[in-house]
Image (cartoon, each protein chain N blue to C red):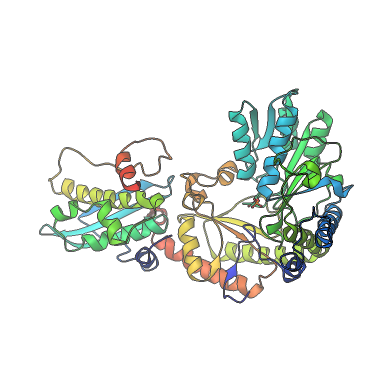
Length: 394
Length: 154
Ligand SMILES: Cc1ncc(COP(=O)(O)O)c(C=O)c1O
């Protein structure tokens, strides 16, 4: 990290850890064989992929490595799980249950299926951003074929009661998928303990490479194939394996699993420090999402009377990289669906800032960041007609 | 994504603030859509002596407000009425397509402030100008100036 930047956007993506990069390197250069070839540099690649599978199975507590399927991204894993279940089970029914705070990888896939004649029920989260498992219980019908609810939210970091939802699904004999892209590497994942049937992970959220993901498919669960072609991934996901990606994914997940406790402590302490300082120094804020059931590095705060993109641009000028759920940054006309789902009015959602801390961040960086943030919010509020009205008591 | 001019006007906005006893004040946009512009004018002998603004909004909203005040100062009322969103945009070396509505908002803030001046001075015309630009469509209450937006986006 030579450049003088303060990176507070680890939920968007992370850098690749040096150990991970080192593990990947040979598979770009000397070890370039195709894992499907029988000569030595093919076989060594086959071994690398299968060793990675064993390692990943261990990291997430899978019963067998054969339950692990590598994909091209977290998005692909989500698409495969949902469309694959829909195609495999359409004779049983066409009803799918999800939540209203899912990532677009899930929401847009559900919308697609809706156009194909499936029916989607969106479970509403409460004001803390949490799904109530009883709502899932009530929503399940005889024709329900899949429940898909994320393990942790990408914007507000809330951790959903996955184990309880899995029990509900099991009781009704309905498949359960969870998008664990944000959870992986931040909180422990044990698929057996959770009782999920399908679980998606992406490499670039825990200091692994981009463009590599994984779908866990519990043994005995049948979903339709999604990418057709050769016989890679036991005929279920065709395409020559991204060997360096697979190796990097497994290495990063292994490191994250070993370091979990330290990682959790470090990130939550930076996050709590930032929250405390913001609360003490900046009035008229709103903290978004449950602070108890939350990923360690996630903080999401709305600053009233200002707009998120302006905050981001000014932070960027000071070398600080963060994210917002305002309309201007979401690329649509509305602010983030997640913030609206937890009951924020539009004008407060427009002023949201997501800060996601990571392992490279330091306490000094948090201090610098808070100073900058206080100055920026003050400057923007002094420019804001909404703040003017507020001060004048209009 | 923004031009250097936009970033300059965003990071060092000109003429931020209020004018006490302004001769014309106009506010457009709404908080739900994520941008509000408020424009204050000081007008003497039919000439805009001073212009100030307050804006809640994104980088482009701040930059277009700032540029609008620069374009206004020194102009006659007639000239000021001719300032189009296009002129504001050109003065900023362009805007990304999704931000064109901010320049429309600037044009409307100018129009609203001039309208206020006229009505205060008994010069008002029939077509009373009102409020929101329909910039975002988010509140679903207007189709005003839609065609305007689309023209610019092509
Ligand atoms: C919750 C969640 N699901 C899915 C994805 C998509 O993963 P990928 O970027 O690997 O496609 C992301 C990443 O932004 C995410 O945060």
